[in-house]
Amino acid sequence: MKDSPKISVWITSTGRIDVLTPTIESFIDQCTYPNYEFVIIESQMIEESLKFFDASRIDGKKTEEYLQGLPNKYPDVKFKIFVQPWKKLGAVYN
Image: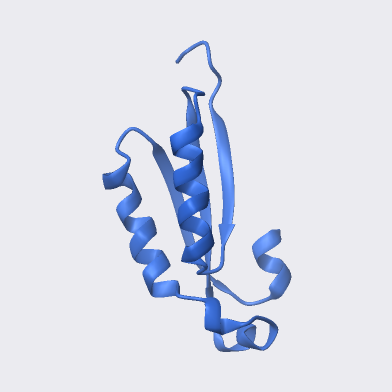
């Protein structure tokens, strides 16, 4: 692993567990690179942000539970998880 520099896989999420789960699990299943980590930014919906997004496809609670369980499910993978309120549409992309 010392010969392989660490790479970070950055994922921004807005409570779409139906997209987040296969993204993470597919990467882990297919990745052959030995030294990587996930940096996941989960932006939770607030009342103001609901005006800009179809909230019917969002499940922040389920997504947060899934994220909290990742280190136990994949103990050999490093996860850095940040949860923050999503105030503006562009904030999740910056």
